Amino acid sequence: MKSIKPTLFTAYNRVMARASGTPPRRGRLFRLLWPLTSYLVTNLTVTVFWVLFFVLNKTTVKGREHVGTERNTLLLSNHQSMLDSFLVGLAAFYPRSLIQPRLLPWNPAAAENFYRTPILAWLADNWKCIWVQPGRHDLHALHRMIQVLPSSVMTLFPEGTRTRDGSVGRGQAGTGLLILATRARVIPVAIEGMREVLPIGKSMPRVFKRITVTYGPPVDYAEFLAQPRTRETAQALIDRVMAAIRAQHDGLRPKRR
Image (cartoon, rainbow, N blue to C red; front, side, top):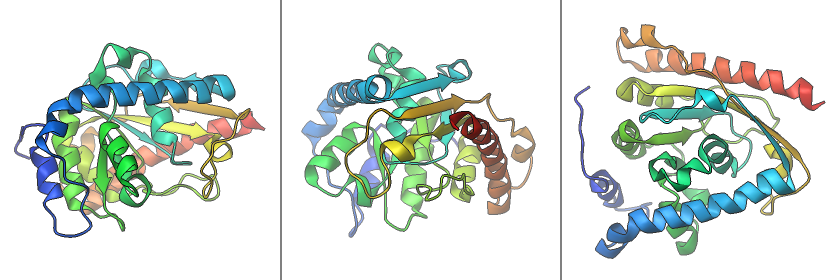
């Protein structure tokens, strides 16, 4: 795939140009101040969540050495709560992100959850969220991910939705297409305990719970790069990643009992 290196907001503005169901438009002043406001807002938020995860709850982190600090790194995790993206990025990079802002991950985010109000939308944009339309299968969002990932880090949940029963579901082919297009370094991530901290349907996180997050070694998917870039290839690739996540997650659940 031909490499494209647009300015930071070129693709973003294309997405905003859609006639309906669009994310909010941002003016020149917002774009000018965004590197500063994103750094301040995200690190302040992450610091608050560090208190939630490591002080008010007991969080155990394993395998952080597998993550590294390379660009074009994709953290793929199972999905249990709306706070998962904060946990995955925080446990991997905080407090190093205070002096290396590029380690603050991009986060594709469901529009119905993170863009419900103007204030929440402003926060989401500063959290480096990528607007994903309701119903998913958003090619504009996929294009945006392909643009930003090679020069950065991204957190993504291949299942596309939060688990209802705690199990790790099937990954979506779109994530496999993203990997094939960017040849990202893929880190499988497994989290357990976040359903107890913020269950589906609740807005206030709970405290005094036990959380575990593990980072596995990079997934080897070289064989898929030689295959035709089809949805079937993408699905087979993401199935391999999900198998790694599932194996890590299965190793966590007995220990929590």
